[in-house]
Length: 53
Image: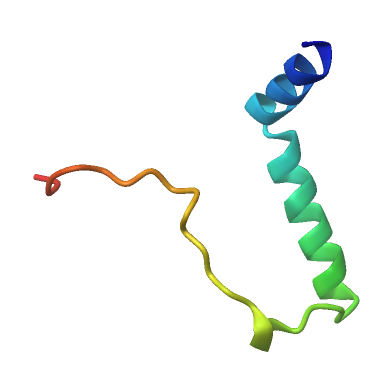
């Protein structure tokens, strides 16, 4: 449970999102990302029911 609690705290605090952004920025600056092979994935986004008014 201790490991799960730390991961949850870090996730809630945005640590993993920040690390992801830093890693992308560093790789992009070093020209190490082949953006022609990038894929956009929205599977982690919650779908909303109905049409916004």
